[in-house]
Image (cartoon, rainbow, N blue to C red; front, side, top):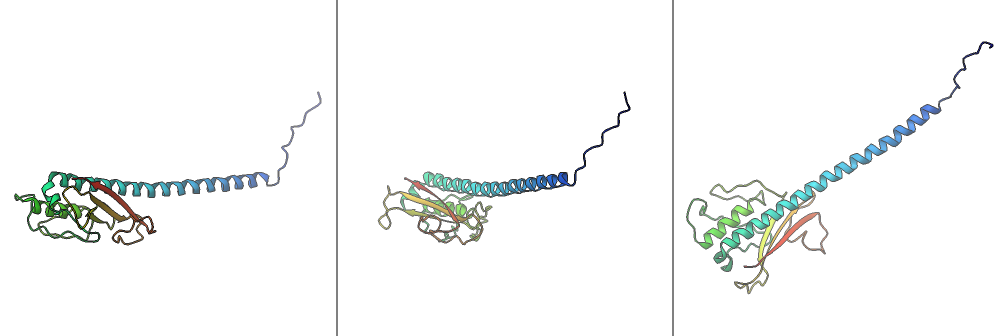
Length: 188
């Protein structure tokens, strides 16, 4: 055998570098897409948590209303859209109350979990569950509300941090806003 010469590798002139750059570009777009999906998932999780809190708040006041049907039938649980419940005066957490006083206390305690601007005496204060929230409890048959009339409990809030929670907005399908709304109907 005649001496064999080792073969020399074929010369490439930059094709590998271009392939690597293209692969890095594709990878970076993929990572940006993943980051965008993560941000979107976090935002949707936050809004879902707000809806859950609103549902809990709505069910909380319906439980209080169910426990004080005398106050419901007397119209003591009525709260107009955009209104803040009056200061209850009496602390029903430590003092025996009649149906009207209990309804005023229930509304004030409940509303302090919705609106950070609500301030009451007697130390009523709760962590606000929804951002810039407002609420209403209205009788369906206003002004001729009866003992058997349905009550609509509405909680609306600024889900995306871009608007004011004005009365009624967010629940009206004809009004385009950034507000979220949760409604429940209570039948006495």
